[in-house]
Image 1 (tube, rainbow, N blue to C red):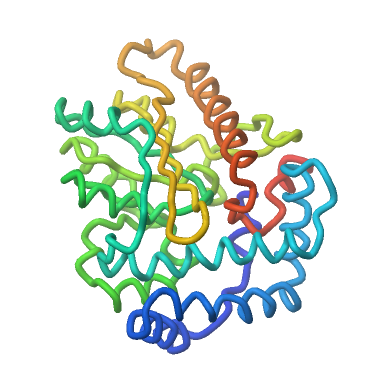
Image 2 (image 1 turned 135 degrees about the vertical axis):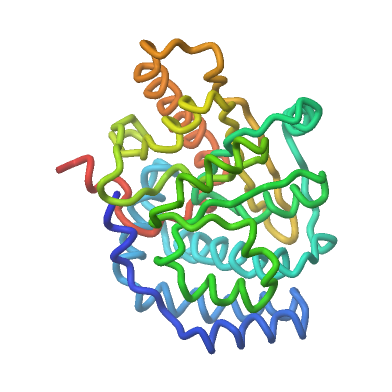
Length: 298
């Protein structure tokens, strides 16, 4: 898992992505969604590795052999969320109907003025988090691995350049220092906890019936800074609907240093359990189109 996602070849040119964004914003979301059908068919036919990964994952989460309709739905859900990102980046939040579960966690954090680590995954929409942060007057910094998605980031800069100040790029010398600075200023820092770079520590935990490797760095950082870890999942429910879930995973403030390693592993197991729960609740929202369990099986 640690390296496979880095080796995926990006498709499409920056000019092409800019064109799609321009057409989408000019014609509106309903018309833009019509473009998703030929795009999904193209990837289904020509993206052999991602198709195999999709089939393998769906078989695990559905408990049956997936058909062509399942594969198309998986790709279409991914395309829908990717398209909606364009409109969310343009601050067109009114286009979407969002139901928030666990909103009291956000209110409590705002009242305390306490920064925390928002731990998400490549499950549903993480961009919806920034939109919620704006509407709830919460400062949210998003941590991303910038180099693997340089084309998408170029598109983000073209749509809304002001967002650059709230994005922390992983893989740089000062990445963790910037995360530390934001947390110390009591901001919310959003991290996707299901991918990492080679050289970072991993912990093997059960996930969808087999051991999988998850990066330990976000958990270790939160425990070191004694900042709460909150699970955030934005599930796409079709049409213009999203369900956003917040759950408290752990609060490291009362954990002694001697118990930190065990507590980190316990928190990671809980994260994987809850991630599995939401995968089963919304199976077509999982967007890791590679063999997620590959490294753990070696």
